[in-house]
Image (cartoon, rainbow, N blue to C red):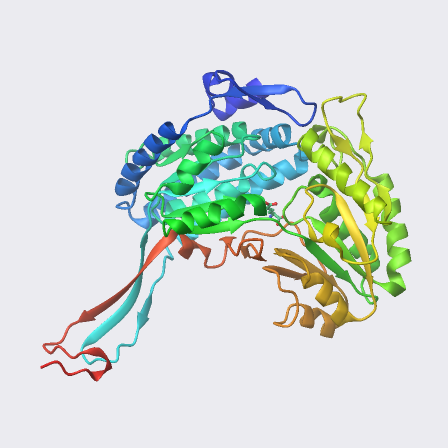
Length: 497
Ligand code: UN1
């Protein structure tokens, strides 16, 4: 199956079979490719080529650059099924979600095409007669992208589509767990470039498959003015100071520990459905996954009972076959989940679910039933992000206490409230409410659309990607003062003669 998909996506066999680094499918643990890992020197050579490509690309007018992204979006539309299936095979999310990820790519391309005609600056009133002030936005340079296994294509596209219309070239280091998806995206972009013609320089977009050494080269290189990195908080802690040490900029999308406050006035049917999608979808491996349910004591028992029923009925199995939960990414993720559940039990928490599933059928695939863990307080275990389907349940009595619990974790990505009380709903999204980058009302914390800015505060890293005015992060801001008079008045009224 892999070969026919890769062939239709235009990836040469030598690229995904010719190397010596094995790529496994989490669906059954079998090898699906062997890729070449690049060393630091090869990465440095790519950066030099990216610099060269940038110098040509920035001269192409922005709406023309948008045309390339439009063509790329067309490629994605044509190959949505294949790319979605490849996402499923390589990272294990169910096909519906694999297709959804490709749709996010298409959506950001559409947004970026429109944006290519709207890279607006400002005109600013000058205090001096005969003077104009304005603010212009210029291309920035080669952008370095580091992405994670759980969303192997969409976050690259959020960055790439905007960076390209902003006049930048790209160097992408995908997760070593999902390099085939990166090769496929690169191939589709190259097809769009071929259709677009000579104005697109050859090395406009490059993929670096490599380990730590390759990543470090990218992060440390002063020719890369912006590093956009998605992954764990641990990764961000290493990347951020290194980029800062050379005065580079970074966009960081790190861990989340997303909560739902479930108030007694909520529509419980809707809330249970929202919890199911956001806590067990993607086998708990989204950075926006619901990890903490903060539920009012008066409805707590009822909600937990309903959730247990829903959890017991959810189908777990091969993500290509229409189930709702696929595998965890690998054995390490499974071990991590089990060790967290063991600690929770030792601390006296009530644990429901969490067992390994389908081990006979897939000895090298790590399927689990999703877990519900009832805890008395928000302890260290709850405050830590475990990348697995574990939902902690905490009770509350007073709404202010619930908001305080929502905020009392180191991460600040996404959050939501289910309530039909307009005061609670508005308070939650007010400046005294949720401290997260995303705060929703009557929908779960995951599954954001691309139109808004995506990202979060605190240990989530502070970066924003995708919609709103995020395009500005990929450009260089310049303030211009133009004197069209025959005098030379100084600002602040200073006399200097
Ligand atoms: C991620 O898990 O890294 O809001 C990104 C969501 C998706 C993006 C998740 N649109 O869940």
